[in-house]
Image (cartoon, rainbow over all chains, first blue to last red):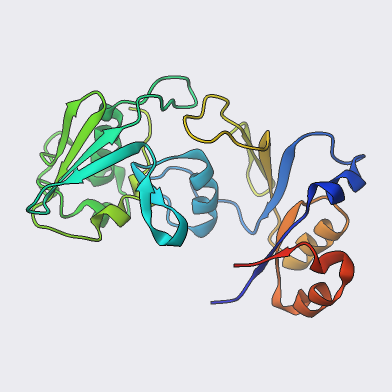
Length: 175
Length: 74
């Protein structure tokens, strides 16, 4: 991998060019236009860079590549390793102002699996119960327990699954 | 996102109602600059705040006092 060094200008240096900059907006470069900002279709790095600033998933990667909560404040895994229950933060708002609830999570994940979406990331959810037999886009393994509790049931235990949920395909969009 | 002019600029604005740690900046302006050396020149003239350093520029930036203090890597 090409080794890049990030350079960050400090505030003192920024003030040297006050004539060009009078707001607290960070000015960065992208090497190309993102191909899409739809998390279901996103596969390019540039799209991922921007998407990560706009969307959240149930979990994300924290320091040391450790999976930490994002929209989900905590989760349980059943003893058989097949069922994940996520307890969602109840104060997450979409940029349209509406509060996020478990139905939005269900909608977002079903949308990835729905063949009509043509998502290149369907494989992320392929081990979810009923992933290959979606009728009207409904997937049996995505269960809304209550407004802030969401369960995912897999057909077999698959330990990397939690990490998959931190990918753009795991971002939650408003239904 | 408040603006996206394809192949030109994409602007994000902070979400003041964000549930987690609040952003420290008001927004991010991403300019789409395919050519690395163009981006380099923009950075040096102060119109970009941060940039990935190309390999070819590594020595110049790591040996210049003005720049080496603000290099950050991981």
